[in-house]
Image (cartoon, rainbow over all chains, first blue to last red; front, top):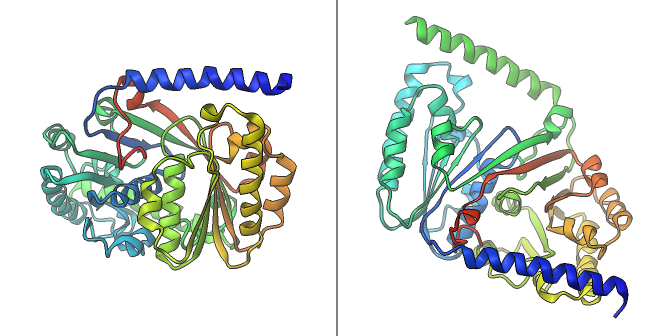
Length: 199
Length: 199
């Protein structure tokens, strides 16, 4: 074996030991609270990727879309025939289009009722609260109400929260938090949002 | 209208103007190069979310998995019946399991042939090169070969690259780069990777 090959083997053995140690140390099994936040692209997309993954194993999955309700949605098109998927939508569209706090609050509260039902359902393995962070930021939803629903959910249920500026109390509660940082975004360099990629 | 409602409306009008200005300024349409990098959870997941989205519009989509070849994969289970999806897998598994540089290099080169074919195919709207960054880092693949294939791809084709420590030349080429930063990861606090969520 060449010296380079030996070095590679030694380095990979060390890495394997590290991975094995971490796997051995992880002995708790329960549903997780994941937060995808930050200004970069990929938050909602990662949530839908997880939905696809959960459905791939036949798990019952629920998605609540708090903002993009009036946009066409490729993921929903692709997956909506799946009996294990339920999607609830806040059907008012972007809050900067409606410009009406009272109507937005009502629409938000209505779809939150759906979310509460999903968060209480023992059969639902994964619940995505897509872009819920803005509802808290705009004051359409109360943080304590959201926290209580999360705390009381079934032990086996995983919840994903997406959106910029996640409330610090949600970040504190979460098991996994990823900050999607924007290093560069095509849209800011004159490139149009692309069908099937960006939406 | 209450003062709070008026303030909300004014703030949303300003936000809408900002959004509209950005949409008007974005006048270029072509395939994009996206990089999802960083140590946080969500890189591969965001790529699969985009695959689901593209398939939702009926676009031909290709995925090359450079590392997780021997893991069960929920997304693949869920989507593999779709005629528009092709998945190529480097079937050796994790490089820290094989611990064999030469065999890994051969396996990588073999699956890269598949990738090159996809990157040259005018009908393929989206190509995902999942975890290819490690192939470059370990020297299994040459950066110039990868750059050339990306530069020569059809203008309408979007490519997503995932993995930690993306090569600086790939970052420089990319239209959109998101750094998924790990703020917290359940696995590091003793929680087991979860079927249908983490894999």
